[in-house]
Image (cartoon, rainbow over the protein chains, first blue to last red):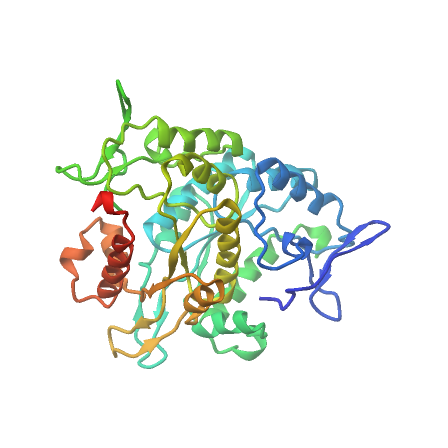
Length: 211
Length: 211
C-alpha cells in the first residue's frame, strides 16, 4: 500500500533503521516483510519467536522522535496482541483503535477484542465501522453489503466512543493497490470526510506535550 | 451463522460430544466458543495452549463417522496452522482450500499461505476468490469493489487449480446474520451457481472409498 515492498532494513549504531516512505522521512515503517529474503516467504513461526521479534521492533529500531507509533495487528487476542501490549506498556500507549465490519460475526470478534483490552488494561480510543455501505457509482443508490450499524451498536454496548462509519469505496481500494495518494486524488470520495473526522478525533486525544 | 451460539459441549465415554446443528445431526461442530462461559470472553491464550486445544479437537471429540472434516482457520502461518496440520497428518487430509479476496494485500497473504502449504507438505485443493465483484441490486451494474482477478492470477502463478470467483451478495450476508438457509431461500443469487460449482469440484476430489 505504501510502495515499500522490496525495501531493506539496515543496521546503524542505535539499532535497525526503519524504512522511510517519502523523501521527508515523515513516515517510517518496520515489518517482518522487510527482513525476509523473498516476499512470498511464509513466516512459519510459533508464538515465542514472534513475541521476541515484536519486542525487538519496539526496543531495537532507531525510531527517533515520533509523533505517533501505529501498530497494525491482525484480529485476535493471542501472542501478537499480548506481546505488543507488554512491549508498549512502559511508553503509556494512547490506546486501542478497534476496527470492525458491520456484520455480526465480525462484531462478535471485536467484542472479544474489547474484553482483551479491559483484561490487559489497554484503554479503548474508540470503535470504527469499516466497509459500511456501498454507494453504486452507476446509480448512486446505497447498499449495505455487509449489514450496517454493528460497529455503533458494539461501541454503545461497551460504553466506548464510536468514531465513524467508513463506506466502501472502490477508488480507495484502487489507490491502495496502485500505491497512489488517495487523499490528494480523491477528495470527493464519500470515505474521505469520514476518515478525516476519525483522524481529527484521534488527534484531539493526543496528550498536550505532543501538540 | 449456524445458530449454534450458546450451545454447550457435553462429555460422553468416548470424549466430547460435538454440537449438532440440525435434527438429522448431519452437521456437527466444535469450537472454543462452546467452551467459554460467556460469549464475549476473550481467549487470551499463547500458542502452546491453543496448540493443545487444537490437538484435542481432533483426538478427544467423539466425531463418529464423518464424510468431511472442515477446519476453518484464520489467515496466517502460525501456531493454529501448524497445530492443525500436525494433528491431521495421520488422517491424510485431502488438502487446503485457499480463499482470498481480489486485492493485492490479500493475495500477498495467500501467496505466503501457499508457501506454508508447500513447506508442510499439505496439498492445495485450489484457490477461491471471494468478494469478487458486486452487482448493484438497483441498477444491475457490476462494480469490482475490491479489484478483480487476484485469486485467478495467484492460482496460475502457483500452479494450483482455480475453483471460482464468488461475487458479493448482500442476501448471503443477511442469511448468515439471521441464521437463515441461503441455499433454500436464494437459489437465484449470483453467488449460488459459483458456490455449487466449487463444492462440486471439491466433491470430485473425494477419495473413492468415501463416495
